[in-house]
Length: 90
Image (cartoon, rainbow, N blue to C red; front, side):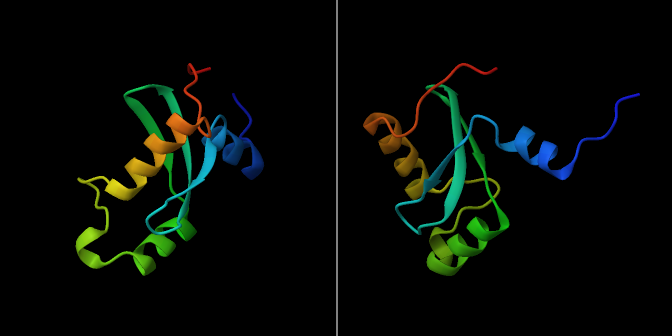
């Protein structure tokens, strides 16, 4: 039987290897990781979702089936600028 981790352990598992990045469109700060050029992981916090919704017009808000173009562009720019590195998964 495995002993359940602490909240800090669970938080570390969700955020390990991710980099904080603010969307250039709305300023929402999300955690982003890339393990290959086509693969991107984005971890949204409740605060990031609230910030995005408050600062983005309804017609441009991301949904479960569509991506946020501004956030995608921010991530691509961060990779090009070296602020976000592509790293192989652990």
